[in-house]
Length: 317
Figure 1 (tube, one colour):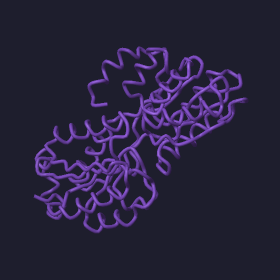
Figure 2 (cartoon, one colour):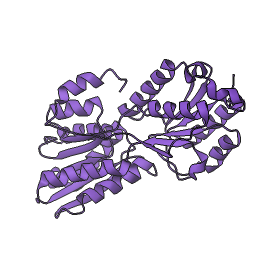
Figure 3 (cartoon, one colour):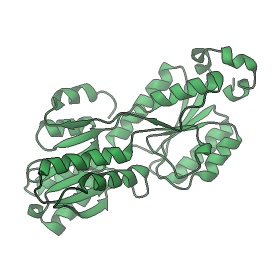
Figure 4 (spheres, helix red, strand yellow):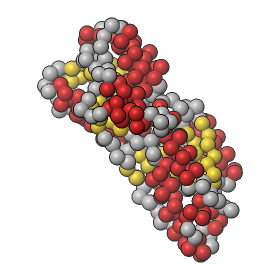
């Protein structure tokens, strides 16, 4: 059964989604597994699809846009009912999204946005990425309380919407604080290994004693950087303050151990709201808002991070 074709019949409005879901096929183009958070998003998406009886076609792009474009075209050729897309970068999607639109296949963006007309996708389920960065910057400004601070920044994948927006938000967050300055900024590609490599270069170039704080666009890079800081004979979380984004289990463990100071949560459950939106759309044609915002939360040493770690560690991170 193809849900798109069934939508042409007036009876569709009377068909319960639970019945439709068992016959639905949805393609999911995932960026890859560059971080613990990404692995959790994949796990939760598969769980949400299984819970609803959806046949989920999964494609791992291994951090390459060309692989995602190939996967989307394969989904279109297979005649899937909808596509979930977590885009590796923001640009270069117009042509393939137009192909999906021409095939009457709705596309829902997960956790990242694209620079394309919003008519080419049904909705985007994301956090407010600028807000996340702003919270991180404001936390550091409050923590320093007027004291000067030389900051190094580990950026996410160049050209991705989280890297662009989390940088913008952080700069806004520290803008009103005198003495807070980003002295070095380089991509760590959202990976733990590159976070360590780039932090090593920061320490060599600046000297650990001249770095007050690290801001990382995700926790995995921060965890890699923690290892580099320790190998340099410094105490992460004390000699160098560390704030990052995602709130993965290892970040909570690092905070519990005093090796990290703060993290802002990005929920891995983007698929739940996405599939809810598709439920309404296929049931009666209800179009969702173009942006479905998820909640973000700041965690610091004041929270019970050991307990949070224990709760989260089984979620696929």
